[in-house]
Image 1 (cartoon, helix red, strand yellow):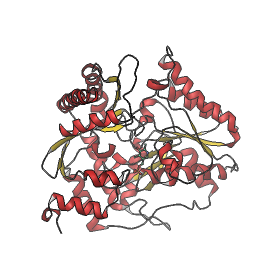
Image 2 (tube, rainbow, N blue to C red):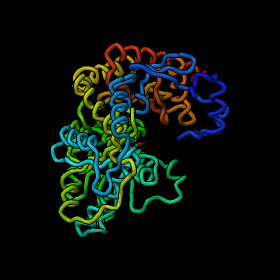
Image 3 (spheres, protein in one colour):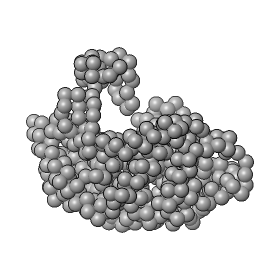
Image 4 (cartoon, rainbow, N blue to C red):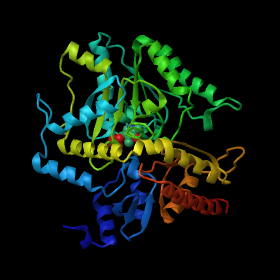
Length: 458
Ligand SMILES: *Cc1c(COP(=O)(O)O)cnc(C)c1O
């Protein structure tokens, strides 16, 4: 059965009849119909009408090496022929997760040497939550189980992910979160800094909110703090440089573990293997997924620091947790081939030294001046554009989200895929973008901003 035997309308009808989509209002979807993407190559995706769209989101923050990589298809094909599946329960293993673990230990910060696999970022955060609580129980402190997170954080969509995350709309449908998770302010200067407060001071104040929460709960009851180095789905919120070192200082002071969710920032997006390295911090766990395989296979890796890993070995006792597809041999083969491409093509260095700075400059010089833009920011190849009605006062357009959706829809119509979250446009391009690709994206975004402004000011 090939889809080419169906017309677009037929496929859309079948989609509507049988396919429930993630994060979708199904009433809206019925009205508008779905956008069908049928193929992709390099930095471009193509819809069923053959329209070429520059993919400013790398799929969903994941296709870092771009589309159409035959090496990855071949790695999967070869592995499937040799051994399509075997589990890693009951003292079994297979070669590709073994080699991938070695590779990840090499590129991760020095104190991180162990890996636990799943198939998604949400699963990896579920593992992380259980592992840090298990760690404190092994240490004889089972009451040390509160986890501090932040408002508007995104840690995935399972029950654990949603509980750790700080998205109120998601939590309102949860019917009861995992207990003992508390949320503090996010480091989002654009909306939360006081007038005249320096970036540095704001970063320290946002970190202080974590210390306040630790003291309120009692440090003897707090297991860990979890955060995305740069909040992604929440709107590419880049903390001031003062924030992370201060967060680490506070965690160490109260013996609270530091958990980083690098599902977006891992594998090169910030111009280092991990944002932990960009920010100069040493987390106890790093959650990774998305770009680990560049999205070519579902795979997550929870990187576990020596402190937790050695407790597992020294104290013993089974950790009652794992997934059928933990260490899936095909997904791990694709990850190995993907990391090889990243290294061979020097993509991380390119983001750090060339395209990251160029992207930042292009946003600052060619987008920030636009009348409906309140701020642009970027770190590596991760960027945000704040849409405002009034540049000076930073007042937003009425009906939160409407303005950003208008920009997004014009952008897509003009061959540029980007995302709107609240009134923030977000960008997370593949790491293969060149200066020329950035120029093309900026041109299309500027045009979308013009067209959206025209509509919005009507
Ligand atoms: C996408 C994402 C997740 C969830 O990953 P899934 O693979 O969708 O389960 C978790 N954390 C962050 C920071 C993410 O961006």
